[in-house]
Amino acid sequence: MNSTFSIEPMIFIKNSTTITIETWFIPFDILLIVCSTLVIILSIIFLFIIVLDKTCHTVSMMLVANSCITALTSGCNLLSLCIFTLGNDLKQVQSQDSLCVFRAYLNYVSGALFFSSFLLQALYRYVIIVYRNYLFLRSFLFQILVICLSWIYGIICPFPFIFTNEIIYNIDNQICQLPLRLSFSIIFVAFCVYFIPISLIMFIYLKLVRHVKQMSKRVTRLNTLSRTQRELKMVRRTVILVTILITVCFPYALFILMSFFNRAPKYHFRIAYIFVNASLLSVMIVLFQFTNALKTSIMKRIK
Image (tube, one colour):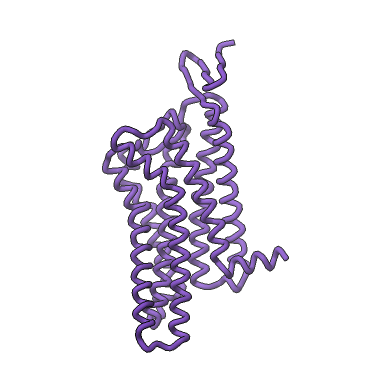
């Protein structure tokens, strides 16, 4: 028998190459697959309901559907990544497949699209409150155009390091990613995928809070003020969703910061993706809770 086995960690020697498989790898791989699968199932159910229920055929629900599509894209890509990692861990293989770099690219694309989809929802509420007389800005056509632009942005933003072969296969974490270190690519992707959309969402929310306070001080019709406060509540819910993403994904950001000083743990990507998958699943559950039209339609069908 040409392999040796010990309890913790398990050490496999194959073709003169020592492969260390920690005991927690397999259970965590399975947990990631379960989370990704649940995200895919929830996204499909939500999209199915939005398409079939005529009460969901509104501009705001179209933006929610866009968030569900981006979540579905992220879930499918993460599921593929987790299955690949689990397969390599089970077979004690350290090698990348033909889709490894492409999955890494899709990770950054889907991340940018997911955060941008919530930015579009916040922008739409801002237009309804501040520019409610500009009907074209609230129309299906304009919002479809904005969604298309956000997809173009998400697809293009990882290009600077895709064609420079900066994405490499990390043996310890069985994943293709940009190596965590102080570099232009890491800072660039952090800004494009996370910092810019989140900053704009928070800026919109603060602007709307100030706008509503000014309205309440002026002599404003009660129904107008009530409608504005209702829209502000929707933006607040978007902020809560993004806050969940930031909070649960904090370890990933922490590992990036630690890598600038060469202090990131050995299995940083494995640990980080546990929180990424958990945050994605949490956001889908909270999105269902916050979207009244979607929740009402689903509960009606369940009953």
